[in-house]
Length: 204
Image 1 (tube, rainbow, N blue to C red):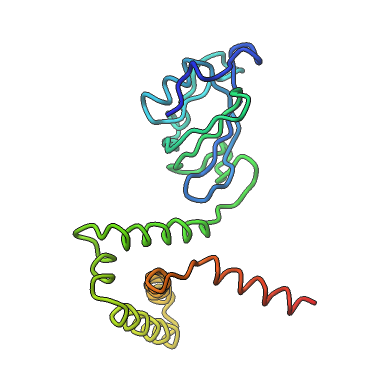
Image 2: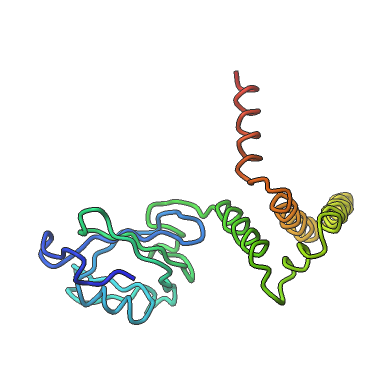
């Protein structure tokens, strides 16, 4: 983790600008400022804390609203005078009740990439008490069978027009598809790139 003495707080009179990004979606949530004390408090509590320029005091995001920003990681820029913080928000970040202070709506699509990486880690290390590990140990035929089963269950849910079951079964199907891709050593990006290329062809 970055230490305070690695940062240059002097350019802005003891403050450093901080961009906060959702660790799950990589979307920008807000911009704030920290002094050395706010930085130290953030590291100590794992809850993002700013220095309020208007109130001239420390301000832990969410202390009043309960919408905390849980610290996941911190990156400094090349000049050591600004920070990018990855945090997991407990609720809306903006005081107006929106996901982001910049009017950005939450997009969970990047989570697919994170899930894919986790599945590949399970394949490599085969940790115990993991359903994913169990699938990899059972082999390709079992994984392919599960994809087929989940596809059929998704179709049945769609035929019954059961929204909750469609969401549940589609989630299971996507997960098992990711496991199958990992077993076949195919990157999810290869599938996305194929979709992109098809879209470009049709758009011509």
